[in-house]
Each structure stands twice: as C-alpha cells, then as structure tokens.
Amino acid sequence: MEERTPRIEYRRALATVRQRLADGLYHVGKGLPPERQLATDLGISRNTLRRLLATLEAERVIDDEHRVLGAPGADAAVSAAFGETVLVVDDLHGLDPMRMRQPGWLERILHTTELELRRAGFSVLTVHPRHLLEIAAHPAGGLRGAVMGWGGGPLDLERLASRMRGLGVPIVAVGEEPAMLAFDRVWSDHAAGAEAATRWLLARGRRCILPMLPLRTQWQRDRLTGYRRALAQAGVEANEPENLEHPDIGDEVSLSFWARRTAELLAPHIGRGVDAILAINDFEIPLLVHALRRLGKEPNRDIDLVGYDHVWPEVTGSRFSDIGPLATVDKRNDRMGAAVVEVLLGRMRGQLPAEPQQLAVPPELVDLTIDR
Figure 1: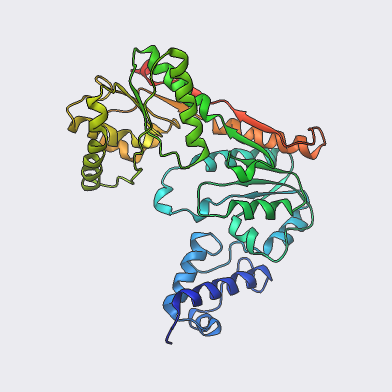
Figure 2: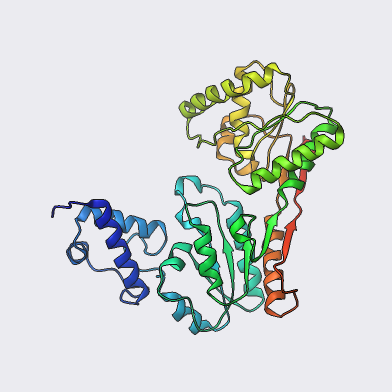
C-alpha cells in the first residue's frame, strides 16, 4: 500500500481511532482488530499503523497486546457508573519514557491527591489532556470536580483550560502557569525554596553564588526571584543565571561529553570567583562534579553545590559521582497533593470565596551535611 502523505494519513488515522474509542466502538478489555484488517480499514500502511499503535501504547490507551485499557469515550460511562467521581487530568503519559526513570514531582503530587480523594469517598478517573481535548463531549454522570495537572509536555494550556472550564465542576490546577490563574490552584513556593537555599549558602560564608536556571517557565523565574531577594537582603551582589542543559547521562561517554560542555560554560564564572552553585535539581549534581574537577576545583570544598527536589538517592547519574549536594530543597509534594484535595473539597462544599484561591505550599531546606 503506497502512502503518499504519511504524516497527514497518520494524523487522520489516529483521530479516527480516537473517535471510535470515544464512541465506544472498541471496548475496554478487548483487543483492537488485527493489524492487517485495521490498516486496510484505515487506509494506511502497516508501518504507519504500528506507529499509531505505539502512540496509543505510550499514552496507555492500549497495552502491548493492543487491548483497550481506557479510551477517551469511556469517561462518561465510568463516571456514571461510579457516581461520585473526580477527574484528574495529567500529561505524564505523553512524556518520553526515557525521562521518567524516577517518579516526577507531578506524579508524586497526583499520587497523594488520588489517595486523599479516595479516602474522602470519591472515585478517581485519570485522563490524558489530549483525550479531554478530543472527545466529543465532556464526562457526564456523577462528575463532582477535576484536578488539572501539567508536567511540562507539549500542550496548548489555554485550550485545555478552556475545555476544563466547560466541565462545569470545581477545578483545582497544580502549578503557576498563566493559563491556570483563573482556577483555584496549588503550587510550590519556588521563590521561598531558592531563597532558603541561598540563605543557607550565605550562612556558610559563600558570597559569589551562581544560579543554574534556564528561565523558560514561571517556576524557574520564581526561583531567580527568591535567589535575588536573599542576596539583596544580605547586601551581596547577584549573578545572572546560567542556562545549563539537562541531558540524560546514561553512560561514561555521554558523561564525558556533557562534563566538557559544562566545564566550558563554567570556566568564566570560576575565573570571577564563584564559590557556590545553585543547581536546578539534584539530577545535575554529577555533571557539575565532573565539570568542576576538569577545571581543577574540588566540589563541596572549593565550590559548594546545592540541589533541589530532594531526590539524590534516586538519581541514576549518582553512580557516576561520589559526591552529592550539600543541601537540597524538598518541595513536599505530599503536602501539595493534600492541599489540592483540601481546596477542592472546600470549593465543592461552598466554603471558599468566589474568587480563585491561590495556595503556595512552602518547601523545606534539607541540610545533608548533618548526616555526614
């Protein structure tokens, strides 16, 4: 079968399959039609069909044997069957699996959210936002509320926010992106976290602290605000942030390559007397350790390293480094998940003011030198 426009045909076929799922033509727990039959039915090649099936597997719509796990159209039936249901919308299934070796911050928050919702007597239905955008009608039946999560995937947040408003139920968003401002929302106080980390370094006598932040998102800009606020109050000059790429270090070869690139990035700052680095997270510590050693600096002796997210024991790259961060910041994602449910229940019960409620959960500075 010749495919003259593979990309267009792929998109059309994917939209067709998703619509059939939404219409209930493919049943949960049952397999899709055989590949040859489905390819002929959709008018696409077997290669394009396999690409389509791989997409549905990655989104956890089907399993590796092509059985339907949960289709977009199943939302209404599930909601009606369970009665008191809260919809949780998150895009984690759309992320590159290679980047999900450890549970991410949103995954941790929503895990706690779902546990607390179930304790409160609700059923929980988790849906990828792409499904919510493409189904013909929003979930019906006993839908009582919704939680909007976004893990940084390629989504039109404004469109997603508009669709969620159409659900007609209380909504709590997780994050600080502009599209979330019209909802009740819960987020981590990144400014407070970066301020606490900077103050900790100042108390150790560090005065030339370099923040490693790309400034692509609001939370990154908030961290820069906290860093600058701490230095301004201490009468210390702030440095402009440096954008350190966040590669996936899988072996010695990639580590050597990225360490060399990072050393080139840091060299001018070392010449200016930088004595501490605020990393964007704990995952970048091994890379910074190797880069500093290339420059003749011993990490955590000549230059202090502070991480973020409190995940050092889980960092796969830590096998490449005998040194971890001196301190890190725990965002307390468990508390954020509990706060999401608290706000949602308050809105359901009519206990909150009409205007959107904004709840910033304070993080905690974790001094890792105490155990050393």
